[in-house]
Image (cartoon, rainbow, N blue to C red; front, side, top):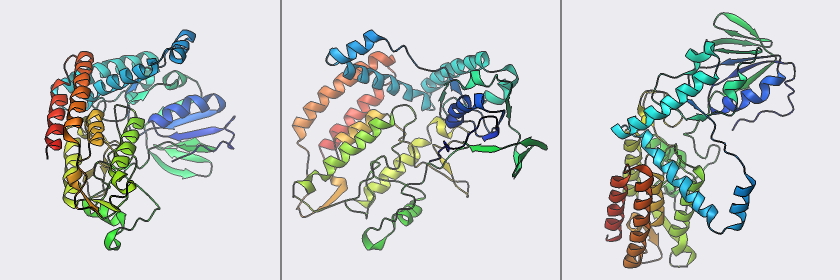
Amino acid sequence: MGILNPDVDLTGKRVVLFGNGCTAAQIVPNILPKTKKLTQIIRSRHWILPPIDGPNLDVLRWVMKNIPGVQKLLRVLVFLETERQYTLFQMTDAGARVREKFKETASAYMKKTAPTKYHDLLIPDFEFGCKRRIYDSGYLESIHAENFDLTDKPATEVTPEEVRVGGQVVEADVIVLANGFETGGFLKGIEVIGRNKENLHEHWERYGGAEAYNTTSVSGFPNLFLLYGPNSGVGHTSAIIALENGINYSLRVIKPILDGKASIVDVKSDAESQWTDRMQTGIKSTVFYSGCTNWFVETKKDGSRWNATVYPYFQASFWRRSLFPVWKDFDFSGSATAPGPRIWRRLFLLMGIFGGLVFAIDYFSAGYYRKPLLEGFQDVVSQLRR
């Protein structure tokens, strides 16, 4: 993770900033007023949406504090709204319609807010959602400043006092790097050795990239659970709920060990392989594969692409999988058989939960999600009967 050194005083300095994503969009408006000159060098464009900040009313704070259940209700509504936006990532007719609406909103906002001379440099020509969306926090307004310059010309040389950009010389006292980061690397600098003295990173190399069954377990590495591991990332909702699902799932799988019914749990190799194939196949039907470069999918030196970042389905689907572990996919030592679900109790609970979800999401999404939710319910029932 990159950290802006707070000890560096940018007052009156000539600054060159590389990058044009979410990081740069937050840095520029905060440092620009201090600088003598800020030159931003970009490689690609991003869709920028209006800010989503709302009024922080006293009455709203009072309601949240004093009326039981309001905060939980608000969280459910936020979850449903963000789940509704998952459709925009799918390369379907419904997804295309949602993307077009977002594209129109972003384009109109960018043209209205940004300087006209920068429109061609800022407004993308690729599908909305292919790169991470940016919600503006003052960036577009700030770049009207006279001490700001934006260019997409490549930097060819850096010297102690200047940066050569497209044949021109830009004087620089400070360089700020906000030009991307690697998301496909997990447990960097940590050596994890499993059964047969296999190194975890060597295990991942055999697959083609980082992966883990249900984002948490790797075959041959017993009792190892990765929190917010490979394919836990989300493009449409909160990372916190994905992390919570992973934690609760791990605790469910570990419970037989904590109860003294087993001492070791290890996911089966074929289950891991099937899961990994599903993650790599699923991402190909999303907007992340529609033509732009992004950090959701890693492009390797040989040109191949690997999804170690995104869970390419509804987060409700991951919640469901985390709620009901598929016990047959694990090997437990110290017990004759793997733990099994209490079928009927869980089935009735599931029917109630999914019934409520289907009604709520169907209401808020005008029917977009009716089919995938019902298919998910049928999938769970079939798992419980195994």
